[in-house]
Length: 278
Length: 263
View 1: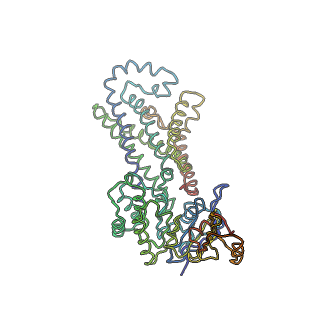
View 2 (view 1 turned 180 degrees about the vertical axis):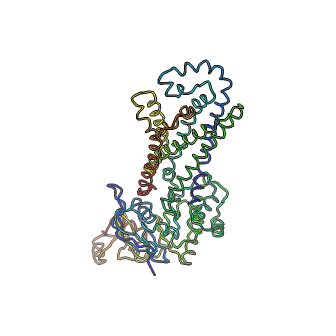
View 3 (view 1 turned 60 degrees about the vertical axis):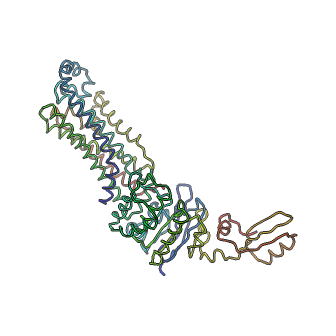
């Protein structure tokens, strides 16, 4: 499978402030790729650099094999982007926003837009200023999907959507991906990554600290150790020689002990708190 | 690009109607007031034309305020000049920055149109709004002349409106630089620019030493009294005006195409 997104050595600073440092990653055609990290990790900077909103300092971004700087407009024709803040022109009707996005693309997307509005239960006669965050998110989803792009870029897409709509949203993504689309999903919600993504990248302080399949991310040598000594409970992630852990535990008078595979949430905390075992 | 131009036009339509009907309406009422003030104006005309530098500043030494042409040039000229400059400045100051200020830029700039073409479309929409503003006001002024049953000084009126339009384009092009540089709407700064240009022209006409530098301001070629008295227009002022427009547009494009868009 070819690489839909290819980022090499991306560095972006805001004056003296760090944005992203030397980021390299690849997203393959037809995959749902998770992009995880806490606030300020550089996720949005990466996305905004990909879309041409930011002029990055160094590195290279290729999308569909095209240079993001010189072929920016051609790339955007095949991209459906959903920003974290779904903000539109307040006085416009939902239907006007959706048809404006299609008109600018020079496409007739009425059929697809109608299908999406129906599945997302979106009232197109309302004005944007009358909508809740969740409904604005739905408008954003329709605008990102109605032209059936080859690549979806989602930045915190599910925030504000109720669980039912979240389910509809991810069902839609899976349907488009089955038809050949690729999805780059930036999120805080780790359960979404573990449930829907094949591979994921973990960002911390502007750097990529791990990129792997979701399976490998959770199936590392690290273990979650939960123990109770004299009524005091302790929990940590151990990453190292398991025999050392057993020797260490043997010295303690344990009331209880659990050694488990860590969840993605725990791995994430482990990565971004920088704990390398205990 | 046409879709974005049309979209921008729709966004500015309400402001256009409010401002043009207000300024044009005030001009229309001023013209209608002429007959009721005609007698008093005749008595005051001599006093107004002998106030030295202030008479020069407001054009009352060139044209008699007692005539409809003089009254129009003095009263409507000032109202239209200030009102249209403020409208142009406000619209241009928010033209680009409003996308970042209202966080709509992420939607607009993710559409497959280059940033340069989006700026072009927005500038075209602004130009159409300025032309429409001038036309609406022009129609109202002509309506005023017709309502009074007076002959319409069509040639002078067209030159006056044409010069005002050029001044509006110049003011808006300078205000556009603010819009390109800022991620927030700076309406106050835009209004300040319009008022500063007006004050510059006023001071230039009152202070004798400043007269030589008057041509640098956009109001220098819009003086209604000079236009209605048939005084030849300053070529230096027009050339300066057009140069300012071109340089300001170039500066705005250069800044905006290279800047990082705020989220």
